Image (cartoon, rainbow, N blue to C red; front, side, top):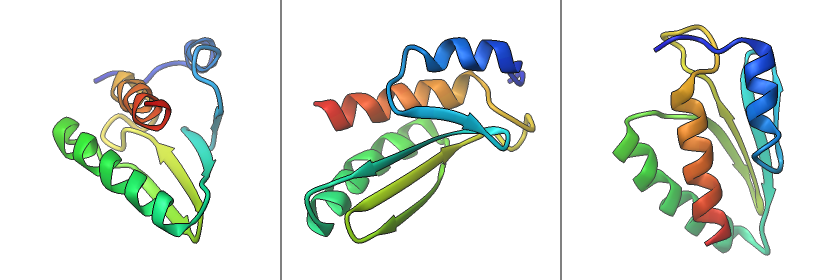
Length: 94
């Protein structure tokens, strides 16, 4: 899969609220009511991650979830990252 150029990445980010491009990856930070809600959301996202076989870098601290997407084989952001970002948004927004 080919790495997307910065202009293409920024154009696509205009269609996804809350995501930004930095350090060769797209990132979002989410806040939930409590740890239980954050962990439940991570669990739902994990099924999609496995389905797509595209694993993000993510961290969870109490009610915060930070997700970074980059296709390491391509050395940057690709279509795979945007596909997963859209799926994550669908999960979060129901």
